[in-house]
Image: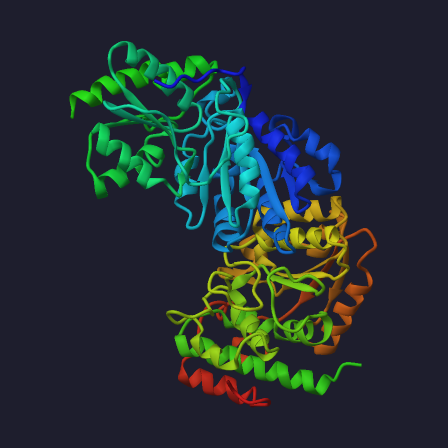
Amino acid sequence: MKKYIDQGKQDTRSGYGAGMTELGRTNPNVVALCADLVGSLKIETFIAESPERFFQVGIAEANMMGIAAGLTIGGKIPFASTFANFATGRVYDQIRQSIAYSGKNVKICASHAGLTLGEDGATHQILEDIGMMKMLPGMTVINPCDFNQTKAATIAIAEHQGPVYLRFGRPKVANFTPADQKFEIGKALQLTEGTDVTIIATGHLVWQSLLAAENLENQGISAEIINIHTIKPLDDRAILDSVKKTGCVVTAEEHNYLGGLGESVARVLSQHHPAPQEFIATQDTFGESGTPEQLMDKYGLNNKAIEAAVLRVMKRK
Amino acid sequence: MPNYEELQSLVTQVRRDILRMVHKVNSGHPGGSLGCTEFFVALYNEIMELKEGFDMDGKGEDLFFLSNGHISPVFYSVLARRGYFSLDELNTFRLIDSRLQGHPTTHEGLPGVRVASGSLGQGMSVAIGAALAKKLNGDDHLVFSLHGDGELQEGQNWEAIMFAAGKKVDNLIATVDRNGQQIDGATENVMPLGDVAEKFRVFGWDVLEIENGNDLKKVIDGLNEAKSRTGKGKPVCIVMKTEMGNGVDFMMHTHAWHGKAPNDEQLATALAQNPETLGDY
């Protein structure tokens, strides 16, 4: 099995900040907006280097989304950033009407997604955002897995014409994808080749899937890991090619099983190649306070849970 | 010096368009449309600097955003008569496969519309964004927006009002259609708005009032005065008093015609009060 090395733990939100720094230097049309969370979103360097292209809107996310929509009229590429909860649920109708339905080239950049926000608790831990965003016609939905991929995704979406939801997180996690890997929107990455089971993972669960696959290999189970960073449009081909080979699938995401990546995969399989599937996701619940590790353990979103799901799904083949 | 006679003819013709459009599909919003007819005619034919043709970015020209999208009939009629699309297309208002959706959208590519509106309270934020883009582009043209008074009950407006003043968006002229009516009745009964001008003032805007928004000359004078106040560090607000349903006697002094179309007989009466001037579509 192909091995991946953790190049040193980093937060994906810093990947966003690094991507913004580069865009500030290379693309004069990129502008940034933030709702009183500059430090959390790691965009200090962008602001210091391009202060005229930054708009601090205060604690007013609805206004931020509308202003972002307006900035596109005149050719700007706005990156509107805040916590995932306030970037989606709080402002769904603003995104729907002023951005998605209006076809505006706004990049909604959402940090602190999922349980791994940690101690702040369920008011801030959104687990429904992928579902909300993928249902909007024309919205691209991206959930990168580590620092390098988040940075590459940030840079890539500036070149994409149309609204994008970019979701990332707070905790420092393994950084294992190549720093020079080109980010292709909508193109799944096969991380390992395998024959017994397909693990389709997004975001923080990708590294956990790699850890699970190592243990499974020791038990003689060959897992093929597909990193889906773009949940919409989904790389149907990559999913089908793998599952046709392995005959079963585990999906893994830091999100409710309703509305998430797992449901999107189930849709593809049910249409084209029905196969047993297990869902690593939260089970229609809110989160709570705790350390990221405690929460991911309690809600069954780590390598141990993935391993167990693989054993379950293989029995159903 | 504006040609008031010509503009007044256009006002009357637009009122006919509005009435005929909503009558044909037995739906739509005549009340606010009729109340804002002078404003739209003045804006598009006397006040705004506009390029020929339409492109989404609108660089090098003034821009307009309609926040209270339900008064689409007056918007569509004035856009068509300004040449953004053919008058014939007014026949398709609210019909299947039309670019003239119930509420204005960009989705079907209708020239003249730069954002969807209808879900209320979002237009000022969008107008601010467009005004900021103009500043970044070194484009000294202005951004105009229109808002219903009832719409100010949406909290997003106050976020936007605070931002525009706080960040000195002084290339923006936001007009509030103060007709005092909303779907469920008088604004002051449904949710009192109080002194709208004073509210904008304390938020840091430069505010002027048009006492009669159905007097074409007063509307033009007010808009010109507003233009003269731009570029001075404050966003400009016009509180414009209008009469919902203006120009049709039985539609005035009530909220009843906010979202209701006239029947055949009512249409005939209404059109008789607004005789054809420039030719029906």
